Each structure stands twice: as C-alpha cells, then as structure tokens.
Length: 476
Image 1 (tube, helix red, strand yellow):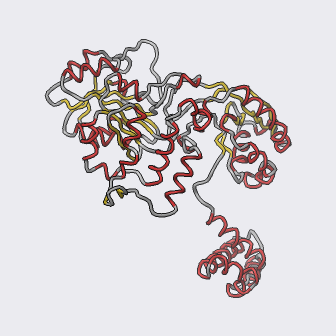
Image 2 (cartoon, helix red, strand yellow):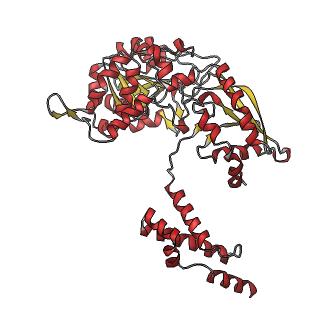
Image 3 (cartoon, one colour):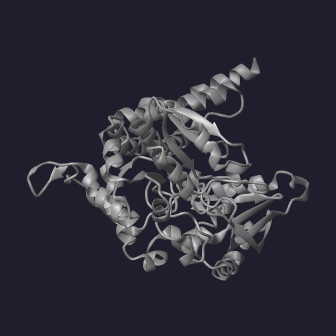
C-alpha cells in the first residue's frame, strides 16, 4: 500500500504535456522541430518517466529533466545512421567500413552533379536524348586497354548480367576450385542459377587440368569462365589452367572466355612496391573476351561493377533488359570518371588516390605516427588500460591478395584490470566505438589493437580522446 502511495505521488508530480510545451525550452523545441514532432517527443518522455515511476525505480523527473530528455531523444533520432568512422582495423579495403576512400576529385565531382541538373542522358552536341553510358564507356575502355566497356552497380551485378546476356539457357564451365563464396553469401553457383545458366564443375578442389575443360564441352556449352579466388588461397598440391590456355580451348570451340577478376587492378601494383595482382590489360592480353571487376577495391573508386572486353560482346550485354535495372546513378558516374582520369597519370596515383597511398605507406612512417600519439592515448586510457606501440601486419582486404600482408604499426591497448581480462578488450573496444567519430580496431589475445595504416586525420583522432572518460558511462 505504501508503495502504491509513493507511485501515485510520483505520477501526480509529472508535468502535463501542455505545461511542458509552454515553457521556454518547450517553445524552443517546437520552433526547432515543429509542433507535431515536439509534442510527440514530449509525450514519449512523459510516458517513459511514468513507466519508470510505476516500476518503482525512480522518482518523477521535473520539467527541466523531461525537456532535457526530449531534446536528447530528438538528437538521437536526428543522428544519421551512416556515419564516418576511423578504420584502424588494419584492413585497408574493408567491406564493412566502406572499402576504398575516394579521392577529392571524385568527391567534388559527385557534389557538382548532385546540386542540380546535369546532362546525364542528354546529348549536348545534337540537342537530343543521350545515353548515360557514354560518359564512361570510352574512357574505361581506353584505360583498361579494351575494345569496349560498360558499368553497372557492383561486380556481383556485372557477373549476373554477363552470364544472363551471353549464356542464358546454356552451360558454363568453371573449375571446382573457383566456386567461391564471398561476403554476404555471394556464391558463384547461385549467381549462375539466377542468370539462367547451368553450372558445369570440372576438376577437383585443388587440381584442374586443361583436359577437364575440353572433355566438358558439349553443344550446350555457352562459355568457359575463370573466377578469381577473392578471399582465399589454395596451396600445396595444386594445379590450375592458365588464362592463355583456357582462352585457346574456348576459342577453338567457338566459345567466349569470361573472367571474373573481382578486385580488378588497372595498373601493375608492383610499381608501388605491392605484390602482383592480375591487371585488366594483362588478362585481356591473355585472351579473355569479357572481364568483370569492382570499382571500389583496387581501382579506388565508388561501388560499381565494371565490364570490359570485345566490342560485339559488350554491345550484346548492353542490349540486355537487365542492364537498365543494374545501371549506376549520376553521382557514381561522376566519381568513376574522376577516378579514371587519375589513371591517365599512373606515376602520380600514390599521391592522388587514397587507396594506393594507404597501401604504400612505409612501416617506419606509421611507427613514427604511433609513437607521436601514444602518450595522448595512454593519458586518456589511464586507469583502465596501458598503451604501447607494436609492429603488426595490415592486409589489403575485400578479396584482394588475401594471403599477402603489409608491415605496419599499431597502438596496443591492454586492459589493466586483470580480474576482467577475459572481456576487458571488448570493453575498451566499445569505449572507442562510443566516441563521436567511432574508432574501429581489432582484438588480438585480449589486446585492443589500433593499426594506424589508415589514420589520415591524426588531429581529429587525438581531439576526441578526452571523451574516452565519458564514453565509459555508456559502456558500464
């Protein structure tokens, strides 16, 4: 009975909705966000307080507290879901963190066409309807060294479109060791099925020979396809058929040779001190008729699927009705065009294309950066963690050179509380994720590691470190 009296007293202490709306803060809330939204939020704050009083956990908040809660609710609701983060995971082209950072030229180009009308599908020379593909096709073909090219919204779409346009109701021969699954459960067999093709597997997981392809060709065969091993490598007792030989087998049977390169490098990465990755030009030179690859991996642009190859095959692909469903928008076209222009001066790519710049950072430079900011990080981690500088390895990521690593340096943040050592690193990781610009690292042996290879804005990173102390409140 006493508890009921306390609850009734608490409920009577809750301000009325109209009274809250008439306060200076309530009037400001209405002015800033509109009457209907402000009243809805104030009502939600009152309801929340009522539930807490009835649960017996808290006394009724006053008007100032309810208004503060309403402002907090609106601020949280207004916060964008898609936010910038610091990618300090050590994976440069991180699928979950947006893959390749765009160069300023691409960002400016996107903003320029986003602000108003553009000649997206308008021929300025002849004053009539144009084709959006004209903005990229010739430039992409030139840079890739292909007869023709076109673009869709991602590489999975590119593979789907190529197979449907060239191989529908036919069989496509693929080595069993190349039936990949990548992030998001993208599987080659599933794409084949959706494209209306029948998959014909040849060879074994670790060894496939030229005779396997020759013996699998029938009157129903529509193409031979090679798929780049995006995120794994098979080592040991292995055998694979080289592109030149596969192309010869396909062409002798009058079939197209399709290659899904995945990451798709436009230039030889060895010139930047990186491991070799098959380039579009090299693969075309080895006899590929059609190649598909990504725009947001090694190319360093926005998400897109790029298709390059023989003119007559690209024309057939573009006539496919599915092409319209998979087309890219004006911002993507503008960004890709800006990135491709950078490839006309490949000797400057490391300075102008962020993805190449990050991949080519020297370990000593990263270590120097780590030593410079270590004292600040240590100062704001005092009391819950110790911080040191460690050498580590970065990776390219997103299916690019999956077994290759890049020497790097990291801040190793180790929990001080030995009693909570089992989950201490997880707690530290959450503190860093709770910062205004979340910091994403990785955990190794209960140590939170911040690989600094991708830390470009050191000043902004350091500026928010004092908030590590307050972020602890949301972790507890």
